[in-house]
Image (cartoon, rainbow, N blue to C red; front, side, top):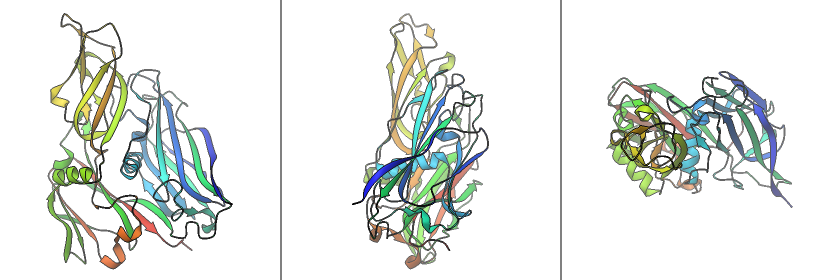
Length: 384
């Protein structure tokens, strides 16, 4: 009889900074998913730095079969956002900006629809030259203590796999375009796949510095089109991005939630919620020696939140611990395009082969930033 078990592939693996870190997966086995735990220790207070959290520092996360066949090729931010979209809830993470404190985050790399999906998953021995895990980062000792960023990687595998396990194939996740915005009108991208598409994710990322966004995600990617049959038919036809993003998150009940420990400083600092379209952040006082917390109204609807603390006499205080609690949509700027429940089976997915020449088109309302298209697609066959 078969059963699922967790196999520890890497334990407290010290990540080399600002470079690429690879390791080989087992030669054989049926793998449903990988769980990656990222743990680090802050070198300094991170309330005055952009991208303070570990997943934001993973610039490339890849799973390669036979040396160059891309099974996964996304950033840490993109995988984090897709995890939220697929599961519908955020993991309980240890987000903290405070000096010397530890942070902990999780990434799930799923080759099926969910953990333990019997239909879809990856069979390692199907890759004659093996499978490799690879991460690339821009971690710096400015932010994290040297040699204290560590990964622990587990594989969810099947012992004594039943005949037919994973006979539906496996899911790939690939960033197929990185576009430097240039205020273009209806810029088309032909999707380079004939697979069935579980989801098409657009990530809209304005440039930012010192907690100030150059524009909004809905200005950078302003209008959307999704067409099939070489643009003869449209699934999304000239819809404003903000309306679409709010609708699709509501339709599938997706509400992102981040919670982090911060402390206040002169000028309010800036605290990265990772949620681009938020509706207010709540703050909880964690100390007894100050009176009031104030969230800056000018940042209340943006990804970066400023928070001030005051004594009862109105004098500003600094270095006061606060819990910042934020809800919203578009985690890391993610705007999915397909009205498909992530748990649905493949008949519900968009068939790129039958639809022929699937195009995503975007009108850019700004030139300050980048946008990306990431495919979550079904691969039924293994490469030779």
